[in-house]
Image (cartoon, rainbow, N blue to C red; front, side, top):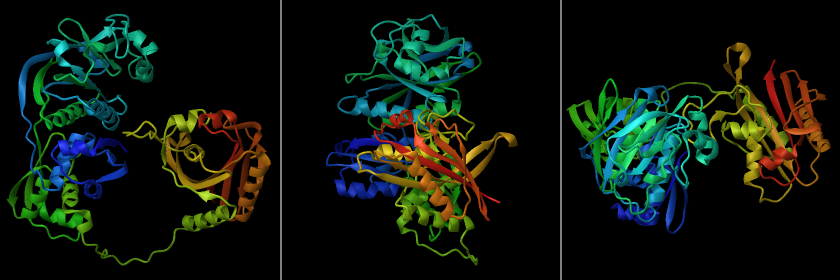
Length: 552
C-alpha cells in the first residue's frame, strides 16, 4: 500500500499543533498505519481507496476533521484562466482524454518539491496503473504561453529536450535512449504517432505518458504551475486532476480552469462539482452494529469526515461529497466514513444472532500436520502475500511467463499478479534477511491461483508447501532427504523423475510425485541455480522444494 513520509513540522505548518506521541496514537484511528517514525518525521501507510490522503496536505485536511479542528465541506474556489487547450482528433486512438488546470501561488521550497513528486508517483500507481490509465505532468506555467495543443506527432518530428537531458531528442529516440522512455515505451510504442503537449510557440511541455520537457521543469522558486493529466479513462483522468488541485488549494494555491476543446465538445477543467448521495440512519446503525445514532449524530460525523450534510427526515440525510473523494461509490462507503469518525474502537461488540455448529475444515487439519512435520525438521514458517510481480515470479526465477491472474488496479510495481508458486516469495524473504545467521531453513504453506487453458482460462485454486535451505554446503542430497522425510511422514509414496526446471541447476533437480489414501502430490526439488541466487542478491547456495496437494 502507498506510504507517504512527512515531518511533524509539516503538520504544524498546516495548522495541526499536536505532540508526536498523541499524533502517532491518533493517526491509525483514521484508517492508516504507522510504518516508521523518529524524532523528526513519520511514515504513514494509507489504503489505496484514499488517494486524497497521499499528500501531507490531504492528511492534514482529513486529520483536522477527525479531531474536530476543522469540519465540513472544503470549498475550493475555481476562477477561469481565459486559456484553452485544443485537442487534435489524431490523439484519440492513443491517449484520448486530457484534463488541464493552472494553479497560482504555489510553494515548492524546502521538502515540498520532493513531496509533490512522491505524490505524483503514488497517484500514477493508485489511479493510473503505472501510467497506463493516467499520467500526470506538472509544469512551470511562467515559461510557456496559451493556447496549448494536445497532438499526435510523427515519431521523428518535434524533437525537444527531455527532462534531465541537455540535447534535443525525437520522440522515437526518447523511447529507445531515455531511461524513462525505456521504462514506459510499452504504453505507446505500437502506435504510428506519439502524443505531445505543446504551447502556442510549439514548445513541448510533455510527451505523455513518458516524460516532461526540461523547459517546464519545476524548481524551488516556481510559483505558478500547469497540471496536465492524460489517459485512457476519462473518469480517472478527471479524478486525478481534482485530487491534485484540491491538495494545492489546501495551502493557498489559486485554481484556475481552462477550456479543453475537442472537435465535438468543450469541457471546463477542472470540474470540482461535489457529488450528492443519500444515507439512511437505520442502514448506518445496522451496518456498523452496536450503535443507535440519530440523524443529528450522523450529520455531525459526516462534517468531521469533511462532507456537508442535510437532514431530509429522521431516517435520511443528503451527503455532499467533495470531488477529491473518489472512493465514494455507494451508501456503504458513506457508512464506512461514519464508522471511522465515530471511532471503531467505541463500537460495542455483539455476538451475531446465529445458531450454528462449527467444525474444523479438513484442509486445516492437514495443514496442522504438515506444519508439525516441518517444524520438527527445524524449519521456521513464514507467511507471505499472495500478490507478487511478473519480474519476481518469472524473470528472477528464470521461468517463462505463463497465463496468470493479473491485478486490475495494482498499487505498487511489485504487486501486479497472483502467485502460481511459493518459491519466489521464499527467495524474497531470504533476500530481506540475508544479514541473519546461517543456516536459514524456512517454509510456507499457502494458496496459489492458476488460469486453466483447458477450461477457457477458468481460475483454479491450489494448496502448496514450499521450503528453502540456505547455507554454505547446501546440496541436492540434503534437499532430497528432506522431501523423502516430509512425504513419508505425511503418508505419501514417492517417485522421482528427471526435471528440466530452469530455476535449478541442470542435473541437480528432480520432479516428484506421490499418492496416499487421501490424495496425490506433485512437485520438484533441487539446487537453485547461481543465476537465480544472484537475481535475489544472495551469496550462498540455496536448495528448495515445492509440493502441490490434490484430493482424490
